[in-house]
Image (tube, rainbow, N blue to C red; front, side):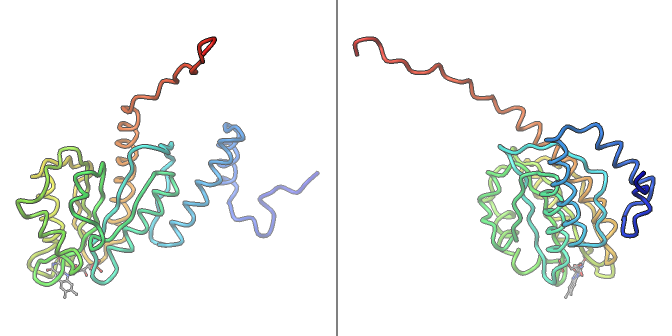
Length: 236
Ligand SMILES: Cc1cc2nc3c(=O)[nH]c(=O)nc-3n(C[C@H](O)[C@H](O)[C@H](O)COP(=O)(O)O)c2cc1C
């Protein structure tokens, strides 16, 4: 009789975890098992990237085509960038189609063509956006900014409450996007210096909502009806 698996010296799960995994895997067919292995590998990658991130419980079904999620960050010293990268890894792990870009690289006019954007933005100076996000903020605040009625968004604001204008850039962005007609899919959260736990909750919730919105949009795309094969008339 083989030794119980949980007694193997390097077995990493406790008995309850193993039983849970085993019970869940029994319900899956071979294709679902292959998908689950990729999902778990992606989740591991996301958590290794940020040990503070614990994005468990996010078992999402998968839109693979159609609308996608964009994650944009404005960051001076890397905190917002790292949160955005972790969010993008977790989205990939859940097979959400996702693009990740700095606000410095993102052409502001493109915003009107996006479906869903999550912003992670810090505040610098005396309530200003990070340097490479200034042009984006200037454009959005100007009368050249497009109407954004087709856009869903969420803002995670990073800052430091010892400054008089706490998270001012994130607050401004959140308010301006709503003013331009975009739909707030995820409420803004203002993070102080110890932001890991608040950022993690926001990302987890934002990705769940992202999945729901993208799924709705994908379901709304009419499926292509197969055309009848073209036949050559006799004698042609
Ligand atoms: C020079 C400087 C100015 C800052 N000004 C503000 C501010 O006005 N309001 C605020 O909430 N936080 C302010 N912060 C705090 C940053 O927003 C905070 O450290 C944030 O985590 C940085 O994120 P980032 O690395 O993505 O830029 C400032 C930080 C520095 C270094």
